[in-house]
Image (cartoon, rainbow, N blue to C red):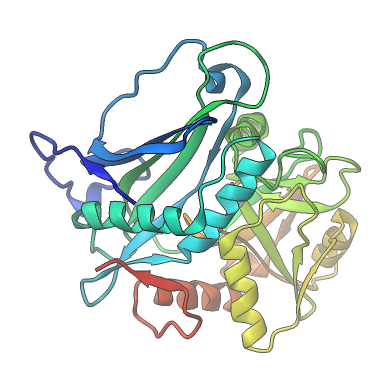
Length: 354
Ligand SMILES: *Cc1c(COP(=O)(O)O)cnc(C)c1O
């Protein structure tokens, strides 16, 4: 495909790697292309990073037609840059698009876009321990009218942000509050789609948990508030009496690529891994009788995030003495080892850019 390149007049100075946070600094360029019902995708271009000009009646501003992805480009020990399972992000975005009546991007076209864009911006991939270039592909409905219907116009953009290490002060287990009022998603809704609206609906519970000194909430299912679903914006896994348990994908859970990778690593190594329903009752009794051995969240940003304390209705339970457990640590070491090119990628998950 043809991607037009519009050169920036000046390039920004690269930030000092130790000052990087998450998603505050952006690279010199962004990828953009537009879609309409008549011509499909057109005007693929890499242009200087800049504000967008958008019609005040644009669909996304009123009806929330927006989906996104999150993945990282990693600087390997040998200096090369690579992506981790980008095809999974591409497929998931198409599934999200299908749910929100946004257009599909053919897989080979999307992969070409991702790689060409990262090639353009690869100098922005920092090389300090734990850092990476975070890529945020997103798509939104962009009709210039207030009528409610599947859109006739859409825009797809990728922006890139160098991000710092998630674990600057070491991997510290987090405190999680079990949320039994708000729900994140319901079956038949948009839980499995990575869409902005899911986040808008989660913020209130997140804020309340933070006020009480917890870093995230553990979500329960939206129908019975009986089964465990996710933790904050991450998937969740437990080790209960030797069994690794993660909630099965029932439609209201986001199918995380880190979740999938953890399952594949553990299964290959012979662990007993189950994707099944896990009730709050089963979890609280495992906490009470000490058979809950480990708990962790998993997602692209943190890779894994150990859970050191769970709180349900003012009952506090400590997990693994508030320390990271051996399986959680092993997953962290294995996945980050593959991502940063420190250990061999026997799964064929990495896609080198240069
Ligand atoms: C993105 C996301 C995840 C994690 O997915 P990864 O592909 O592992 O980054 C989990 N839950 C929610 C709600 C998400 O948006």
